[in-house]
Image 1 (tube, rainbow, N blue to C red):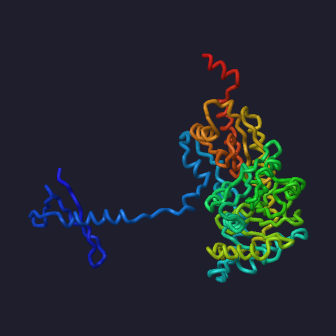
Image 2 (image 1 turned 180 degrees about the horizontal axis):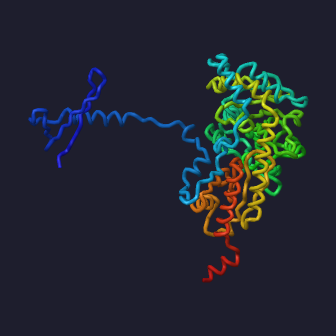
Image 3 (image 1 turned 180 degrees about the vertical axis):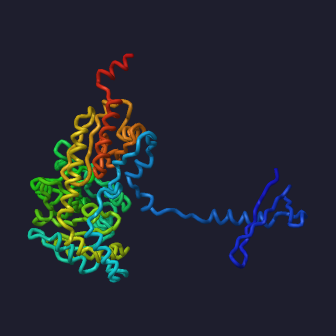
Length: 468
């Protein structure tokens, strides 16, 4: 078979021309059918090879070290839903997916008014408009933890707020204390920056309270940050005032300088009191991160904030200046949403919050009640947020090696997708997002029950099957 080489040229117009040189024994045919040596094509290929050998483009260490555990787990799963059953995704922490939890009309009108005003189409200061910062400060300020506009930085969602908070407090080689199970973004951000993550344990039997003894055992002279997530993703737990005080009085929050980063999430069920950690702190400096996403049900609007609580000026000017400098790397917070924030915070009716929270609580109770009677499962009732964790007694499901295989097969047989808690570095659990419509919540629980009844084995059954 004849060898074929190509000569690629670019003419004066920037258009590629390709001449095929079909050669036999080192010779080629020109356009007139005459043979000549294919020297030109060979030289071109040699030059290309030489160029490739000289180039050595490598990805940065930061990009190599960046990994989202959820994506690493989910992307590797074999998810083939049962074609006879419509898919019910209980894995996505986005309250807008099913359309049953719209934001309030006042919130939408605030955005429309901001657009129509034509005042917010340009660049804002990197830390946000002064007026918008003042509005957020007033909304969250309380006598025990007063805030002013200078104590607020506006960010592109809560994710950027967490990024800035970790980055301003930590250097490569430092370590941070992170809850387990906990929001995977903390580790993604820290590890990419060369910061070590130490996981402290949460206790499911105590409604996911922190194992304070374990947390304190992790501290060394390179510990620079303690992350407390309250209410919790993925657990939905809400810490009591007493527990928060125990955290603040413990070794992690003692000099010489372990700071707290608190991720705010204001969705707390009726009858459960939410206590701000900042309102309880007499001296521990706190960077509190929050945003519009979950409370106002608009995660795509990408507006978050950092609240700087530092009564005794322990942070000093340096941390504040560091946050400002980091915010200047990317001008993140959407200006239109900044223009609407005053009306969003001040004009949203209380009925909207009450309706949302009541729905989440009702769905959580349905899920907890239904799954509590399923052999092999142990749900933990949440007190807030939009998540519920369910334990799997893997010894009673011998067909599956772990929670990933369990949830993978649940999709295959029942078309119900729950996120395996291995994604939160807490195996043998799965997380359910309770934002789906009520009828879907009931249907999903029914399917999970059928799945477990099919695969559940008692210890005696296991022994009998082995003997046979």
